[in-house]
Amino acid sequence: MISELPLSTIWESPLTDQPPAKPGDLIYEDTGAAAPLVYFDIVGAYGTMNGSIELELATRILVPRADGSTEVKFISSGRLRCTQNAALNLRNGLDAALKMLEQPQPNMAAIAAGKLN
Image (cartoon, rainbow, N blue to C red; front, side):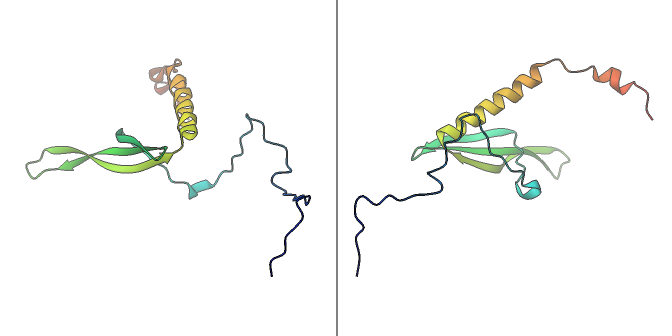
């Protein structure tokens, strides 16, 4: 038998009763070596499907040939799938990292010529 609750019944949920997080708050937990490290040289392909963004990442490899030369090939190294909001966050992070590279770097020759232990 199914019983019905009166419409005046108030349901409390511990998740919805919490104040909303501030937009600047970031919850991050370091997972150590559990998260994969993805290295790539190019974005081989990109597109969208059902509102999700798709990126195919590729890494350059050198393949030796019998004649002693090498052939350059690209192999898939990862696939990114994300929402539009996640893609905007990724782009913001990449833009910030690229800005860091634009800052003057210390003179590496002077550092290399410095005194060793």
